[in-house]
Image 1: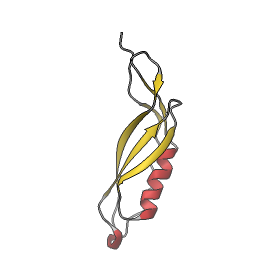
Image 2 (image 1 turned 90 degrees about the vertical axis):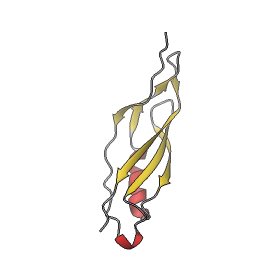
Image 3 (image 1 turned 135 degrees about the vertical axis):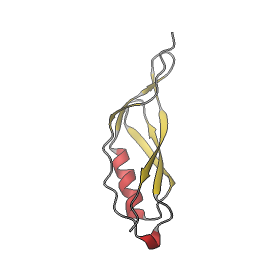
Image 4 (image 1 turned 90 degrees about the horizontal axis):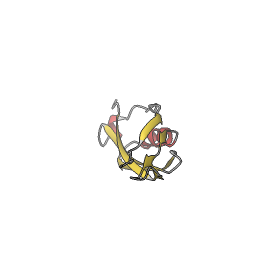
Length: 93
């Protein structure tokens, strides 16, 4: 019996993202890849697609570090490290 499971969220509060000044905007999204350890805590976050505005990107990264998950499991049901990609919309002013 395959007991594998993907990541399941416990807590994922949405970040409070500051508005991006139009002059600094590269795009209207921030995309991050988050890495989750066997405990279900986020161990690393990489910005894959930046808004072009550091404070907005930093707010997303900071919030994602606070997320928690039920860890992913291998086919034997043992917790394993996993990663996921998440996209956030930003407001450009």
